[in-house]
Image 1 (spheres, rainbow, N blue to C red):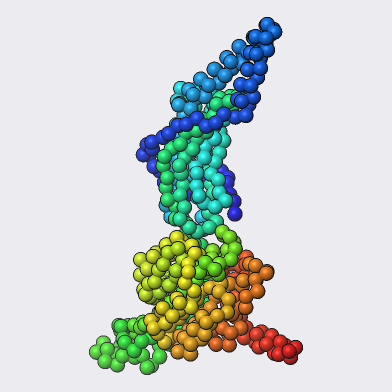
Image 2: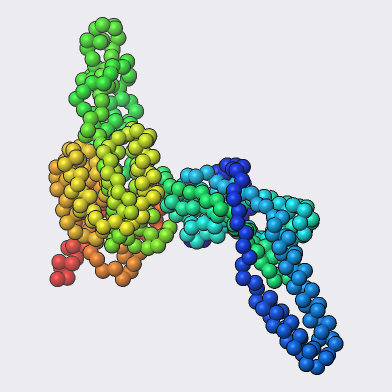
Length: 442
């Protein structure tokens, strides 16, 4: 999608006062220069052949125009300096960021137009502006705002400044040899609590909260609160302190969550910000953020242009490591989602959660999830609806078989937000009715 360009300011900018080396080059002249050169030759030949005085005078005037335009362009380009203040090096999808430019004309001829462009490989975005410097000594300051719509690792720069004489005969281009990397993280959206099993929501106090499955190991002792279960009272501490004390429990490995992001190249549909991979990245990043905020250890497995397999952890470094991987990895992997499930199968313990986000059609991976579900793993499948991206796709949807295996299944259609897609799982009764109708029709 094309970037949004407008005036304004942003909180994502920083100053860079370092002077960058520049290179200047003359770019090929405009068509009018070649037309003018042809006209000069014609007038010269005509004047020499006929002795027509007006043709000779016009020829002199055109040659003088060429000389003035060349001097104007040459002198003008050498007196232009441009400084740019670029945004911070890490942003997220949907952030509106600003670049600030200062164009300075140091004792040069007036400039009717100057084009300033900060080259970038961000898809669909051109960061450019045309300004004029009408005085001998003048400067212009302006901002360009844009919104990034796709995650990834991109570059900003080099800065290119184009100018010419008033007639546009001799354009010049100045390039500031400075580039900056820009990492765009996936969007983190507000999503419901869709991946924690209902058994993990307990109410040992008057206020219901997420405590997740408790291990048998006591981590500490605290004062009794109204509503605490009698079974949690620590009688020795109660006798020693003279007031009711209750046990708090440490979280064991049964509280872990694993997330698999499928980036197999053959399964990706759509382009850019409207692709299955971009929506999957938003869902995975939002899931990581939500459950790590709840202090749940989260592990991750994904293979695209980059590969990452990391065991469950609740640290901030773990969160940043996963989010950066999602930002930089593209859907060009060669390993199917079944292999990713098989790789972590022994590490996923009973009572933990496994979330698989994929656009893969029905296959062996469905049975693999079903086997984990029977083992006591809470399995969740977030399935991209392939037909909504490509109506001509004839691959079989895995949703019916996932539900028959007891896997909590979410159907994600093109254009859905992450919060909407994860708000309601697929209803088993819908597939039972569809199957019954199909059998009756057969």
